Length: 230
Image (cartoon, rainbow, N blue to C red; front, side, top):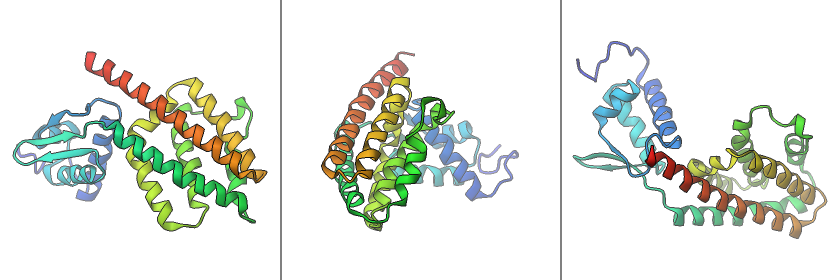
């Protein structure tokens, strides 16, 4: 039976492409598809149960986001992890976010601080009940700082960097101790911004991002080692 017309699929091509995109991306994030792994379109079509057309749309989207490479006549490859690039992206984050913090310390109207405080300045038993969602809360925290500057171009670049480093950054929240540290460090950063202590807020933010960068490198390498052994 042709993979271009599977009997079980009645959704629109756009919906199927979106579903295939999400499934393959999750396989990459979970290290089921390891960095450097190769696969053919026919193999992947069977794996995610979609036809070739929406599959190719999903693969091309993942390629444009930097998660996959394509090799004519020899299939697709999961992008190898490049920690030098990740380090550069983290450094770029530091520049944008410390600039954003400095702006927030000077701003008169700062409604974002109340929103952030409601999430991060809470008692331990009032934290988000789903620990696995702290990675998304963390993204929102850092993204909100940049978006609050009102600089749409800087926010766009920051959002792109957030997407590109998500594959390793989310691993920082698989350890309870790191979740605790994130709440504590975010609370101190919010406190410094609220009191308009710009230098302190920037120092705390820079240290927070640098520590996270070190942690995710260690966790990623350990997970890759364990995944390849199994």
